[in-house]
Length: 59
Image (cartoon, helix red, strand yellow):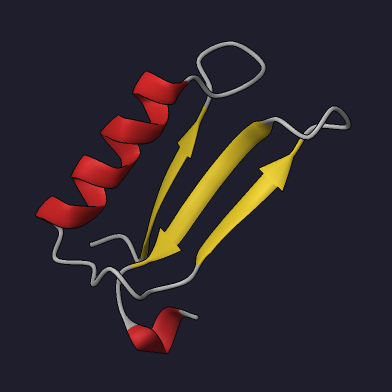
């Protein structure tokens, strides 16, 4: 079982729909809403990759 849920934009940067899908997957996996999210941004400040740990041990 993966220890994180990770998503990247299909093209270079993530779209809002891709971000929504990421959140839905995290919710289905039981990730609590107060868990920190890690993101890699492009030079222009757009999200390239985002991930969230499935448990506190994975922070």
